[in-house]
Amino acid sequence: MKFTLSWLKEHLDTTATVDEIAEALTDLGLEVEEIVNPLDKLAPFTLAKVVSAEQHPDADRLRVCMVQTDEGEKQIVCGAPNARAGITVVLAKPGDYVPGIDTTLSVGKIRGVESHGMMASERELELSDEHEGIIELPSGEVGQSFADWLAQNRPEAVDPLIEIAITPNRPDALGVHGIARDLAARGLGTLKPLKVERVEGTFDSPVKVSISEDALGEGGCHVFQGRYIRGVKNGPSPAWLQRRLKSIGLRPISALVDITNFFTHDRNRPLHVFDADKLAGDLTICRAEGGEEMLALDGKTYAMPAGAVVFKDGNGVENVGGIMGGEETGCSDETVNVLLEAAYWDHVQVATTGRALKINSDARYRNERGIDPGYNRQAVEDATAMIVAQTVLVTPIVAALSRSAVAELMEEFDETLRALHANRIQRIATLLVEARPALITAALAGLGRAFAEVGAVMIVGGNINHATRVMTTAITLETSRGALDLALALGLILLALTLALNAMAMGLRPRPVGGLTYGR
View 1 (cartoon, helix red, strand yellow):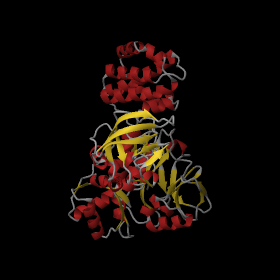
View 2 (tube, rainbow, N blue to C red; view 1 turned 180 degrees about the vertical axis):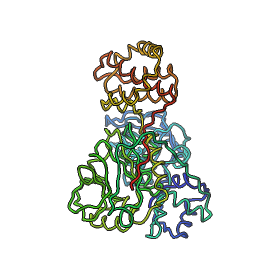
View 3 (spheres, helix red, strand yellow; view 1 turned 45 degrees about the vertical axis):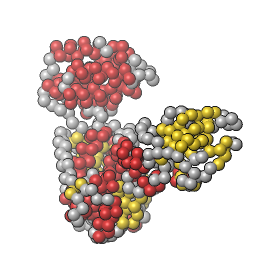
View 4 (cartoon, helix red, strand yellow; view 1 turned 30 degrees about the horizontal axis):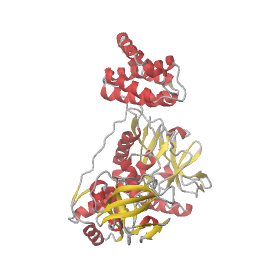
C-alpha cells in the first residue's frame, strides 16, 4: 500500500515527521517497506542565474553561458533552446549525481570549451518528463537550495512516499483514510472528519439491476447499490487528481476511471462505472454457467469458470463481480451516460474466481480481504458528487440534444413549455439576435460546449443577461471547422435557453443524477 505524506494529511491533522509516522506505523503492525523522499536526491542542487549566453564558436546549437553561482561566476556550455541571460536556473555542480541521466558530473570540455557543471531540466532531476529546455524559475536567490525552493513553491514535487506491507488481517489499512484513523488512535494526530455527500436523485434509473437467487447473500453478492448519471463529459481528470495518482505510481486515464481509482486507494472502496449506453438492457448479478467469454479492461479475453458471480446484460458477461469490468461497456471519451456501481462481495468467492481467472487487480486485492459494507451507500453518494463536480458539464437538456432525442426532451418538459409567457420568448429571441455575428461563425464541434456553459449558468445562476453574454463568448471562442446555419443554431440555442428559463421559473432544477438503484 503506497501513499504520500500530503495525501495522509488530507485525513490526519498532524505535525509528525516522516520518521515518526514510520515508527508509529511499524508499532501498529503496518510494516514500513520503503520511504522515498525526493528531497534526498535533490539536496545537492542550488539556484543560479545566467549572466550571459553567447553562441558556441564550434556548434550551432550550443551556447556558452556565464552563470552566477554561490561559488562565483562559472562557465557552462548548454544546448537548451531557452538558455539565455537573466533567467534563474537549477545548477548541478561537478561532483553532483544527476538521477535522471544516472551520471556524476565532472569538469569537462564540450567542443573544445570548458564546462563547469550543467543547468538541469525537469526530466534530468526526475521531476517530470519535461526536457524541451532547462528549468526556469520565477523566483529564488542565487545559492538557495532547490529542494527548499520546491518545498515552498511546489510541495507536491517533494512529497515523501511511504509504502507499507499489509497483512491479511488488516484490510482497513488498504485506504489512506484507514491508515490515518489508525495513526490518530495511536495518538499521532487528529482524524479529520469526512465530508458526508448527499446527491438528490430526480429520476428512476433506466437501467435496472437484479440479483439472482443463487448469487444473493452468502457466497455471492451481499449488498449492491448503483446510480445512473447522465450528461457527463469524460476526459482528462483535474490536475490535483492526476497528481495524487501519479504520486503512488498510477497512470491517469480519464476522469471517470481516475475517480474510481481514487476511491479505491483513498477509502479502500473499489467501484466500477459502466457506459450505460453500451449496455444491452438491464443488468443481472448471477452465476456464470461456465465458458462465457468477456474481453476485460486489461485487454485480455477470459472464459468464466462455472459458478463465478458476474454481471450479465443482453449480450452476456459485462463484469466479473469484485474483480474487473469488461471492455465492451467501459467508459471512453465519448461516454455521456454512466451507471456507477458499488457492491459488497463474498471474500472467498472473489478469491476463488480471481485465482481461477489469474486476474490480479486492485479491486480483487481489496474485495477478497474485506471492505466496509457499511460504507457502500455513502461511497455511491461520495463518488456521485465527485463525478458530477468533475465531469457533468452538460445539463440533461444538452445531453438529450446531443443524442438527437429532441422529441423525448420536449415530452419531458411539455408542462414547463406551456407555462412560458410569450413576452419572455420574445425577450430571449431579441437577445439572441444581438449575438448574430458570433453565431454565424459558430462551429459544430463547439456548439455542444456552448450549450453546456449556457445551461450551467442559466440553471445555477438564473441571470438571463449574464447567461447570454457567456453564451455569446463561448460560441465566439468555439469557431472554425465549418459554420452552422444561422437559423439552426439560433433555434437550438433558443430551445435550450427556453427550457432552462422555465425550469427556473417553475422551481425546477434539472439534475443529471438518478435515484439509487438497489439489487434485491
